[in-house]
Amino acid sequence: MSPRVLVVEPRFELEGVEQVVAPDGEAAVALLQREWFDAVIIDLRREPLDGWCVLSAIGCWPTRPRLVAIVGERADIARAKSLGADRCTLAGTRLNLRALHAACRPHPETSSRSPKPTGVRA
Image (cartoon, rainbow, N blue to C red; front, side):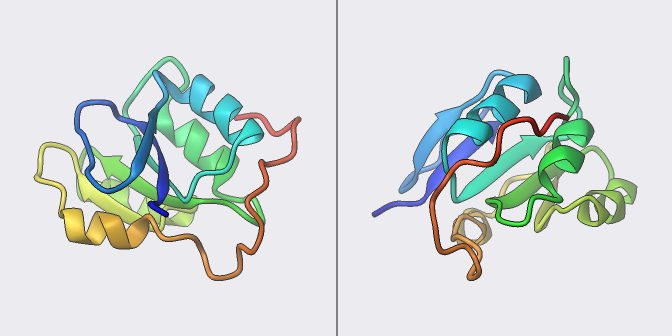
């Protein structure tokens, strides 16, 4: 079974994964509250609900997908990791697909594929 990935950065296609695209951060949070994903790829510069808000909202969930953050500059990497990002890549650089596929695996402690509780807001 291929990993299920929520992409809040629809400018690229991934092969070998089930990819669902959210048009923005608000839609991403709504999807995450209803459905399970093995990973979320999010551009931290997107609007209307910017990626930083989404990352801080879902980064603290006790069971959550892996979070791959696309950041604008190297200085943003530490902040993204402190908010829960498992992996970061710089915007405008070529994504390392092997590393991305590794990031799409579920967390070892995630034994159930259930959506997150409702009421969690960004």
